[in-house]
Length: 448
Image (tube, rainbow, N blue to C red; front, side, top):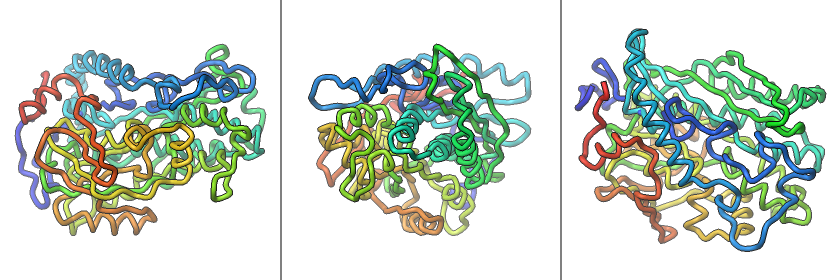
């Protein structure tokens, strides 16, 4: 399964087999801390640990700039733990053969784990919302607004945006609703809102809700909080190969698809900042909208766009797709390839993110590696096909722009409008085999 394969027209058609890489955020083979890929561990008050009365927001620390580390989230530590898990996961791949399946090792380090079974390529992902549900609880308590339907939608979107990034379309989603006390469900409208939002997200993505788990975990979760997470299985459309960056090349165009705001990462830092404001989540933004309302704007689901792109006959499928969550624009160099990703334009920054950046005193370089800053998805398209991707995004109600190119050069991200760059060493999500292959200009060896 190494080397190039004949893929027919537009480089999309498979000739048997498929390349394949679990994810830095939740794929099997890269276990996440319970509660979310992007926001763990949290600085107090997170689902997963009881919160002092009033919440973590009521316990500010000393002044100064406030990045993710100050909010209790250290990606260097987390990424090292994920790589350690991947090293162990790799050794289990041969066990699939006894069931007639085969792991696609090139999916190790990508947003979802891929495997072949019965002549089809399937994808599996596990993902969590993190601490955004704590914001929803505070907004309900302080502003009287029930936004639990929106954080449920957020969770499904986070799961499926990862799943679709490897070229798979969702089949079924499983839910995980953990509470600190069963009394959480004693508010019928809140429980109804939660399940309605989850259902709506599945319908929008065209997949089934297959069930789930709803444990009560006293002593582990705060009684007032709920932790949201889930899993999904998807399938690569027949005749297509997974999208794992194998066709990424100099000259490819980078299309950035807009986000709606915070999405599913940055909630821990947002909570910390809200605790420093006199009016907390009721703080008005320049538009007049409250901070709490803006933070809970639902994530965008990119599954409909990716399905359109995969089924498009007039242009090749994207050569790569990156779901921009934690790590911000660092995720543009997620592929373990020696290529330079240059941006010449950026989407508008959502009001709520601009507000958080100002409150946290983040410089542009730190801001764009902390929040998505208005870019929720990156599509890497064949030369000349970026404009068509922008059109397809508009057709499903999404804003996008051709923002840059893939260039020859060392693995790094260059953001020309801001005069900043990020080096390869700032993002290391791949297992050791993938890193070695990238340096050698090839693909990871098959451990089997």
